[in-house]
Length: 184
Image (cartoon, rainbow, N blue to C red):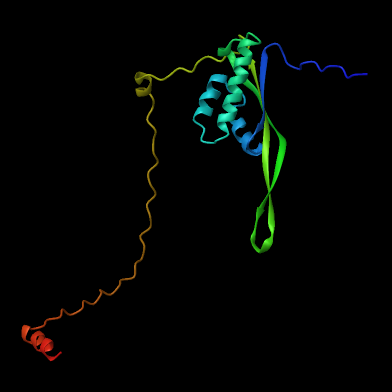
């Protein structure tokens, strides 16, 4: 009366890696997973290396595991791998309490995520050619960009302002200052 064992639902040209209990919310992990979906495995690793988010390191480790599984367990060519799926789900939720004012408390929820990365090998005919870099000669032959002339502004009618009055300079004689000092 036992249940039948589930069959592995993977194609021959793909491999996957699963990371459970990633210490971040699924929304934050999904933002990083979105960066690598559909990209080649090599390009995805470079993007994750320079991503500023802390979760990127967990996603990068999962991607490296998926690439290693493809190479060692499924004998796939790692140069032709691309990220076909990067899915994120919820796992557990830790509930904590924080003390607040007037003897109250507030609940805190600490989310954990589950990350699944599936890499697939591209077919021979679907391999994208490498983009050609421009040389100096091709850059020089480019047509110059024409800039439209700037619009002339209408002259503004400024009301003339009266010049500011200058304060009369104080001129004190030495005798006057001496008498002031002596009277004190």
